[in-house]
Image (tube, rainbow, N blue to C red):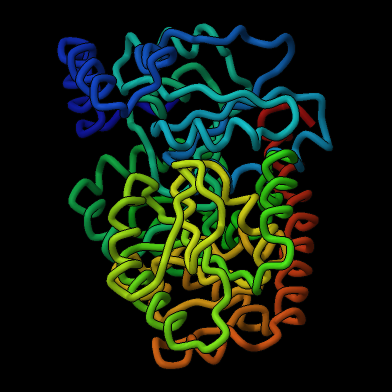
Length: 413
């Protein structure tokens, strides 16, 4: 283990005060519905599941999208070993959506808050043989605690744009210390690799995005059958994963069509269902809400539920990827690609620039503007959808070398 820098030493000293406030803060989050009532104590390092026998690989990602992206890598590692897997994250939504999408021999826990006492309990219980961190969420205490126990560390699927780099550069000595502890680092793109190396990382490799290789999202078979029955004889179906800016553009496009498809609006924040229904009415359209048990009888079916995107991608031959008409700057296009739904998107894709670029290189996605969306909805995009699915399938097979290298790093090959 490398001796901690002054910056990390100061952080670790300060983190010893976290238990003084943690229970109160978590209780407040629980009261607001931001923590699961039966699992919030996991954030105090108290495991709610038994440790399996045999070696355990621990993977961490901060939230929903990052956690789901790890599934392909876990699957590739599971194919090559008998290892068990522990995935940690920090958000309630990530736990709820991952539950029906867990890969083989995998379980989920919340990452403890970054205090030595909590991390000690966590590591004493799980005793991982390898610690894999994803994207850009590094918790200094957890990284140091794993390294101090001789647990090999890897950072995969790293992503760091210019703004994120500028924020981390203010703490350059801390990040240099943390990054020096990782034995393997892969980045999604060259810009991220450059930023990590400027912060002190060594030997960063560009390997592309793990999101491309994630397996299809699951769907409840009974819910899928019921939805398909409800849609029999209906007009064509369009899915839009949405923020307010996307909804404005999409509703205007639907209203402009003589033969309107059924629009399934899946808001990124399901709590916005009532707000969206009011917006639909302002456009002179009718809507129903799935969260209220209503079926698809209007112009718009508002899918204001959590964890059902696998269902909607299977039902809809076309998906308008959300966040691409506003400051969100896009969401993951590989989720519809994996299930054969054609990908349309707006001009703002900075968060997934490399992913959209890869799809455009094989003519597997199409950019639309507000004035070109309506005519695009009337076209046949089945060939584009097939190319997207084929690209996603190929990406899953490409993970085997990285999976083998990670297993070897943990002495599990």
